[in-house]
Image 1 (cartoon, each protein chain N blue to C red):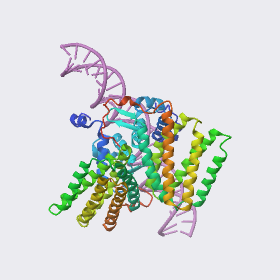
Image 2 (cartoon, each protein chain N blue to C red):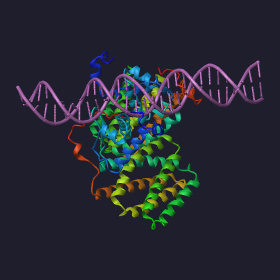
Image 3 (cartoon, rainbow over the protein chains, first blue to last red):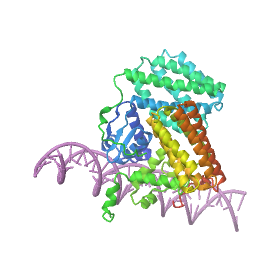
Image 4 (spheres, helix red, strand yellow):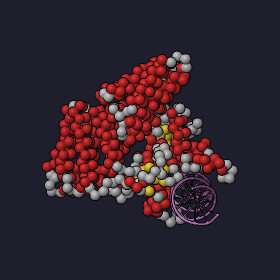
Length: 255
Length: 255
DNA sequence: CCACCCAGGATTCTACAGAATCCAGTGGCG
DNA sequence: CGCCACTGGATTCTGTAGAATCCTGGGTGG
């Protein structure tokens, strides 16, 4: 049975299956294909991914560690509800940490990196007409790069890893919002975001911690407001109320 | 083979073994029995806990999610080094989040709870002579209760769960510090801590967010300074330099 | 209404394959 | 002659699969 599987296929993803499954499931949650409250059945997932149930289970444990699913003893995993309230809560935490990071990064970032990213942001704003799809993609990538630069330069590796974790949870809302919104308000938001990014970069360039923290705070809150507005205006709420019938009582979460 | 094991022991914790192992390992890390850099071997742990290696693997994945161990692909788990730098980093993150929490908790906490905890703190300070051991224990419990009260009242469940996670990591330093310090500077710190706690409670009672955040920040930093001082002054550094020659050979048995 | 039973699924156990490390023996070089 | 790099096998550990065991929830009959 194992001989049937080609050796090369085993070699190439040995030790990576759990991670691959984690990423696939994350993507599905973020794309809304797996809705909040949905019961994740080990065996189904195993068949779908073409592996046995053990790595699936381990992937679910990892996801529970990240906070994407809840693990109920002897009953399996359910996708954690992403309520508007939960989104707000995550944004608040992220705001606190991003502000801390940007304060600490002040004066530590290589000015050349700042200039480079500043140039790119300006270029993005200037050239956003011809290829709208690409522009959105580029905007995401720039946002990610700026935040990574700050996290990486804040001199606190633990803080950086926490921000990375939050970014994963964050993408859930961002991508869901983009999907709902399409190109409706997206451009306005891209432009707004670019302005916020420039303000952050400027504050960093001048070494003004207080200002950097302030504009970062505004940036996170503006993003949160935009996403929440789009999602509320959209067709669905991304929350699943049907698991509220009192049975999944909080055995203390296994993480 | 399985018939030898008594059925009752199997039945009583089925579905909880992973959790039990996680907690045991956490306790051992915190008590210093498992030192930073130490290699955790699946099979040994399985034998020690009387289970197979699957739940042990899953427990290690959970611990990696918390951040207590590092999972190296194909090489297993090692207890994450607790360097002075890492401790400082965690403290910085915790400070940011505790300040955020206390700001949000301002005006939301039941005044009766505040009065009760305030009374207990004063009682602790007054009565700290007769039973020194008990006093330290009580001080820990009070600290924990105050922070839990704030986290639980900040109106942000996600923030509360993040703080809970940090508290777990935190205990590593705190308990290590207590162990080193014994009763040397402990009483001074207990008294100091009590004053800080009272300041926090007072600020909360008055609904002064800015002040609450300020004293909370000072409280966290003072604790960090105390622990770092004790650990530096103590006999060992709580980091394991002996595996620094790049090999990480797991020859030393894990006990 | 309560006790019992059954199906579905979660958890754990056992066995085995792949990968990394370790160690001794060998040969080259100063 | 002694020391170091390299190589081959042996060992140990991790990762995966399939089977066995156990738990939960719902249905059924008294």
